[in-house]
Amino acid sequence: MMEKLYLIARIADTRVALRSRAINSVVTVGTPVNVPAAPPHVAGLFALRSRVFTLIDPHVVIGLPAVAVAPGQRVIVVDVADHGYALLADAIEDVCFIEAPETRVTGWLLPGWARVADAMIEHEGASLLVVDPSHFVTLPVAKAA
Image 1 (cartoon, rainbow, N blue to C red):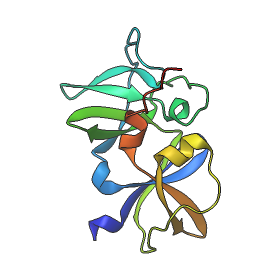
Image 2: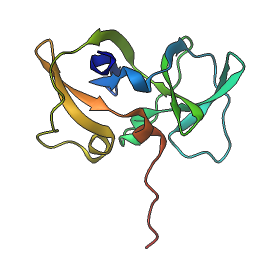
Image 3: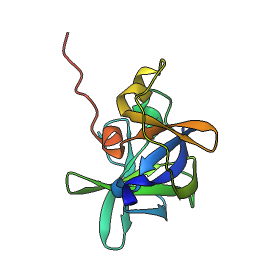
């Protein structure tokens, strides 16, 4: 039954669904510490319960300008390859069971969304992108010309 549990969030003004098995928690972030020479999608580091998390800006990953971290902003905490990360979210809407099956993404997506979306799912009359948090963390390596 847990495979049908999703976190519904808004990222870059798009409603997305994240599989609950990929989520550790949703927390409020303090002021992150900047990381010199970090990739552009790394918004900083912050500490939570004696752990340090890398704060990821999904806006940058999908090809949009970076957003500022607002005091008290909620983030989605995930583990990728045994490291702690937190994804900035515009809004956390709900955690719910969705009985509809995941389907193949149909239609055209912007390249950034196409890279992070695994599937689509219908929920309350709307199509949501099912995104994998690990795709926001690990960016493709640019090839030299």
